[in-house]
Image (cartoon, rainbow, N blue to C red; front, top):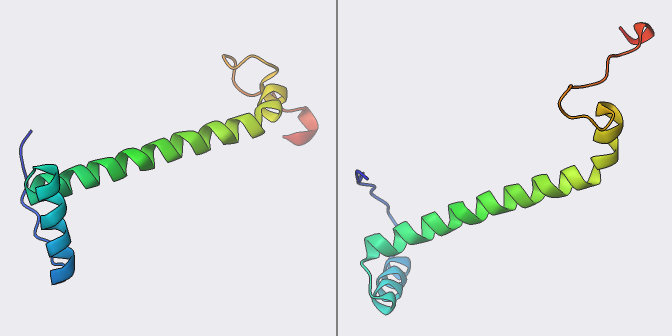
Length: 83
């Protein structure tokens, strides 16, 4: 994968913490920050999937009623009075 340079400004205490944490893990500061971003993005993705699953569970009955238990057909036709 091609790499892109990203310049970030942080205060000295944050920079020192990043250096120390990278050294403890035996990786470069660049790799350490890369891993933090990837981990954070993964957690966001998991959070979204969990929220979507919770939403579907909460509204399962509504969807079942609307689709008459058949998700291949799409929504049930609306009665003439509703059109």
